[in-house]
Length: 165
Image (cartoon, rainbow, N blue to C red; front, side, top):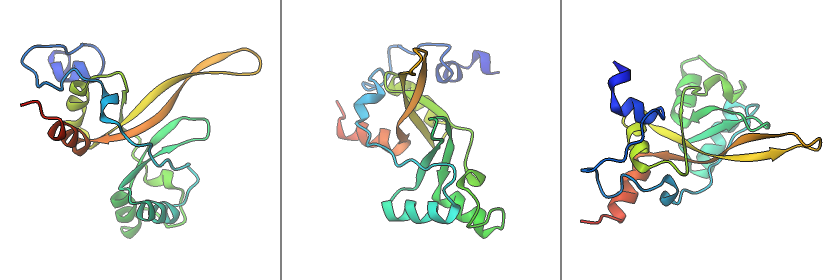
């Protein structure tokens, strides 16, 4: 069951995972990956345009973020193409019709160990950074900014380039 599964507890922030016998990189922060800024799509972008943009820019996936900053999910080139070809979406439909709305978020200050646990079950994680935003009337709120998208390949590349063996 999930409540006794350490990996689930770590992934969901109920348990800090600073243990011995972990790889050298386990407790390093996600910010060490030096991720490049992601391509972000607005929700009104059509499936056709999303395919064109992803192909032109050389991306397999991109977060879909509302202008308010709300992260709506992730769109992938393969899912968009297969949805259109299967007739489940039209080229003219907004990209939100083919967006994965179940995704994991991780912060820049989180450990690569936590990221590793997330990537055991998910193909990617959206790296977010919280930023305080103030309005003209003096009210403030925390806003999550998409800082990057990280995959298992990003983690593997980092580890292999910096291997401490």
